[in-house]
Length: 69
Image 1 (cartoon, rainbow, N blue to C red):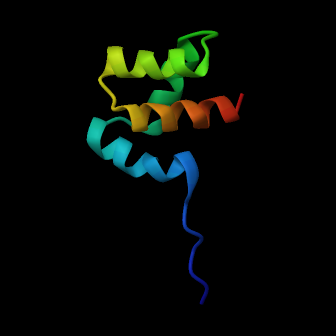
Image 2: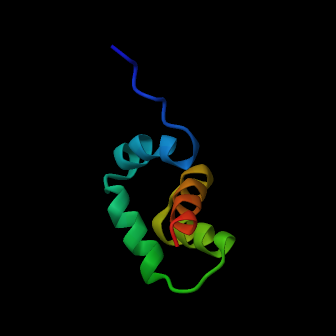
């Protein structure tokens, strides 16, 4: 029986983001989508200032979001 691969990178933050802020990752992806054409750090700042996310969590969400555009 093989062990599942360990999740690395931005997605490794997702379980703690969902637990701490009580919203699924899909919610945060929609917030970022709705924000419009902003740069990486502008999106991080938006999540921190308007949604009170910590820097690491905001950065992980934005990195994941930007990689999928």
